Length: 346
Ligand SMILES: [Ca+2]
Ligand SMILES: [Ca+2]
Ligand SMILES: [Ca+2]
Image (cartoon, rainbow, N blue to C red):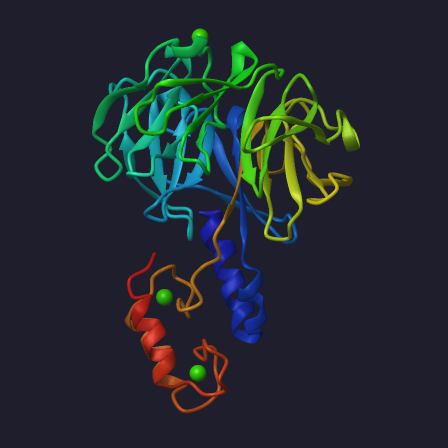
């Protein structure tokens, strides 16, 4: 389990230098053709390992942190939505299994009321599931509504609460009512093979496979703002996965070259290849997700905040130490309160 080994190495480093924990972010990359979700150090791009233990991971597309803090992975080839612990990469459970309406699930997103919505690529619909139990609640967007054809992995509930669906074969981004699922019209009427959508500020960013770049739109009215990452910038071809990093840069993955490229998050200017295609078997990087750093209250780095961490804190009581969460210079009751507040996280 290489992911665990790498995580332990980070912890050992943290013991000698508490600063290491502050830059502990991980980039998860769904490697569609390798049937794996690989993890990389977000600062150095070093390969850490992969999500482990899933019984049936095939053709992973969207991998998104859910309302419960777990990592949800759409496993298209096995008609499943799987859950993983984003801290140690361990498999948690099958949240939605085959036979619940799924026919090529590409993504997952959540309504304001907490239901999970899953685009089903081959049935041209978006299905609704109970957000806690995963129970199938029927079609949210019915088959072919608004001409939907190939709802893809960037499907997401936008800042206005409505559902935005990249309709792959239709070359369009459709909008559906976030409460009823009713078609509201094409938000973007013409875009070549749209894949991943990101709302940031008042801008909608979209990877376009055939456009070889990242297009940008006014997030309120869909008005085009042109290319943010120009066609072919830095060598980019067939972009699919995309995410903004904690450093503010935009990371964009090429489905044909298998690289993860890096672009200035403000100007869109190319900054080179961040992860080389083939690293750790990386092929067809279809989705990028930056995972939250491990909670600082997890002092021993085992991804659980429990008595072991309390023991570390008590051992430092009254002095300086890694348990001085608030930086007051002393490990005391305020730090204890924080640890107890984070208890059993992981
Ligand atoms: Ca279709
Ligand atoms: Ca711990
Ligand atoms: Ca303190």
